[in-house]
Length: 163
Image (cartoon, rainbow, N blue to C red; front, side):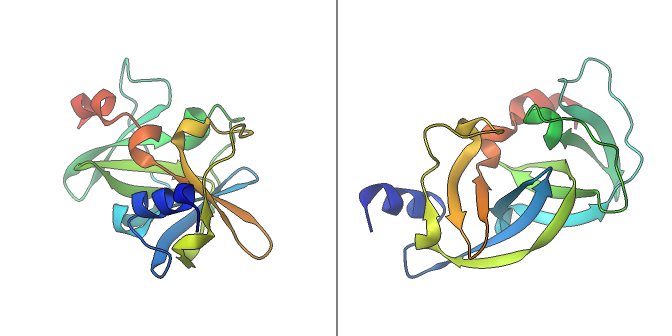
């Protein structure tokens, strides 16, 4: 395994012998994955309360069992075409650096267990999503999965005043 892959695997918290456990979800035609340890729960879409002067990619906040959490629309965050919520739309609740954030995604696919060595560094030029948000790309049998770096994709500092 090359040094770059070792580094990616190390950042993902795994060696080549270890398995990465990811929750995969779709936004448009792309499939993304996040570390399962960062995911707290997955909920159906609920009514979101708008917050004045929030960053453009923030839909607002929801009350989740007595805790107010900010909701980020990943389509807006990644500058993708907007789409109405439907029966498959989900809010993936994640812990990013100790802050609880909800992410709106088109659908949640599955929980995947992948050997760490299937994760490769993101190509220099990545279509659709800013490459700084990407930890790597996993090659699956018939598709590619983009492994997101949540701490870079979502600025917790911008959202902390909303909680």
